[in-house]
Length: 375
Image (cartoon, rainbow, N blue to C red; front, side, top):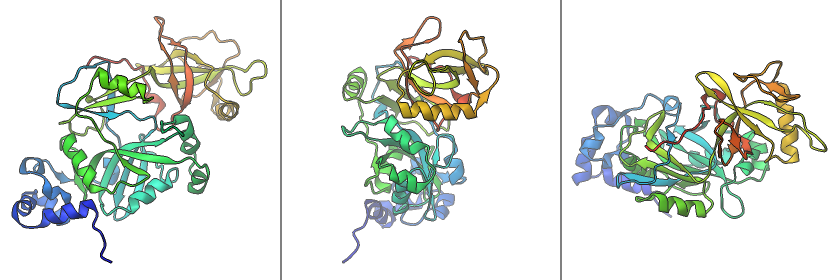
């Protein structure tokens, strides 16, 4: 029985054929024609976009730092924006070259062994020489993303143990930075997503992230009602920038952000582990106190966290100002926690905070107080 061609191969063969598609292939820059195979999807690009292509410097460079969204309170948008679901997982960049797949966290830490099924699925693709950007999530029984469930996989570096957790994960891919060894970051986002849709075969655990072409307050309200974390608004013509950019805006349903753990208090009564975590964020190079969180922990988390905190103990407070916390224990400010809360008080402290989980994909020194703007 003849092999059924993948969508990418079918399109690519048409691109390499005669007629208009063949002439477009000839319009690729010479350096790109030397790099990409004859049946490359890149031959379907028009001359203006083809001129933006260039050979990529390498897989590690393309996955070194992802583009980050800026928190925003903006709710009115024009037709130049598109909207994707904001996922509650871990940012993951994936590369494949000569059949070898590598997965990297937001901080460029290898995570191949934490999510072996994703690496295997990408190894089975027809495409090669690519870099993907996306989010790995765990879904609960209702289909909602569950960051606490994902935590059972995040801290494991043994592929067999990761599979043994029974936690099924999905890699939601939303951008294509490189294909056939060619840098795509100068192309408009809408074009990159079009290439992405055709470049891969999307079967579990790999999913294409769809988008809406219109959005605003009504779409955000709909997302919040469905239990989503929010939306990400992206300029359809934006290039991919390896930094935080106002071309991508983070529209949240609830208030929350990452904060640094600088200490903890002793437990009272029958509680195990610790009483509360002491939190902060960096401002002008100093760790500013943001408050304490004592809810959101189960017994196992309390015990495991206390073990980890004891290993990074220090004799003095890491915070810039003295704290009046009786019996506080101080730790090196290296752990990052995801914290949900209702609002910031006038004194700059968290109101009604709750612990959501630890973030191993973010550096403590990068944690600042998020101040949503109108951009």
